[in-house]
Length: 540
View 1 (cartoon, rainbow, N blue to C red):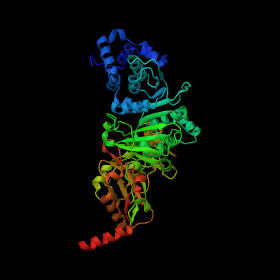
View 2: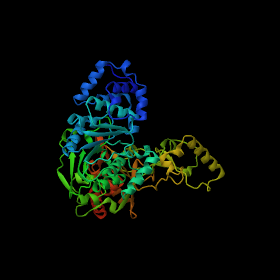
View 3: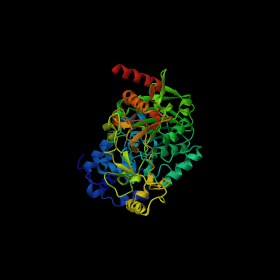
View 4: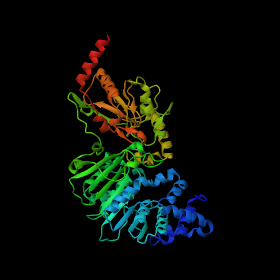
């Protein structure tokens, strides 16, 4: 690129020089403010404008590339801005246009990658491109201007609450909805989501990410016969807070196909997340939905699925990744771990810097609990955690403070005053506790397990009775087990569990949710004990 740009205002200058101010319909107030400060004529070289224009016409996204350079990853992540690679957007656009929509809605347009692909195929297509970020909509306007989009409307607005004009023909929806976790979503947006879900006869978890809101908004905008193709993180396939997406896809949105990119492919450059491309036709009632596991982005095109799954099975299932794998059959003489034990993730502190202490602390000893706070502590322990000597301690103050002596109460109050000064009480986790100062550690688990790594989990006998926070799972037998039974169960899990039994994320990181760990199959306990006794006898 000629003369790299140094700031976002210069990027806006470039967009204006490309014709953004006169493309895509009336500017919003935020866009007008950006344009008013433009210095395009004075600062943008004609050669650069020509170079960017040629790149856009040939299929590139030079504006998006400049944006990625100018806005750091932390700021992009805060807005959920993860742009779509061409190997993903191109087959999505190809499929959508094959359905002959008369209008296309670009949901979360970003720099206009989808809009650009659409206009290169048909510059007269009616396109409505929507994004909340005015810098993004200015880039989309510039893309439209260069590509001669005659019927493009660009809206700097919130996709979840925008009102679309009535349209008689088929509308196609396409996009990569922002990946924003629930912690970053404003309360007013969460209230909208609850109301919108209720209107659809559904409920939505407070833990759902913003991409779930986009599916919900689309379900309200669309009419029977409309079509869509979205790419999002694939986590909604299995997690409880993804239920709203699964319910919409088996209900009003009418999923036709699901393509899941293998996590090792790292589909979004520079972002460790998974990807699933979903095609849907509103109110579709086909008996099956196609499922496909895609090894790499190069294998995504064309969007044709190979494994039909009965829609009713999807409706009845709370985990959809299982439809991408061979079904697990519990062998004769085996059981699932959940038959004899419950698996619980450790407590979330919400502020480890406050609640996890190393060394001395001016607090009563009975509010300081030696705990596993790093997965590596379990990996290092070996088969048995015999001592808590090297562990940090978690501060877990009871909800009621009246039982403490005056001296201990003063020490606790002094600690809490420091926590308040550090805004610990205003954090999301603290706000949702009965008392913000009570972490709520679970009782010591007889077996502790890691659950996220690039290696199989460690299953460790908790001889030291350590507590654990949310970096580990605790395995709690449903009925009392002897120390020998605990030891044998942990050893069996350690020797038999493999990475492929978990849920793999981008880059090969594998995770076992509590319910997934409970579904691990093992020989029944009596068989394990008989084998252990026989082995011990043989060794003697």
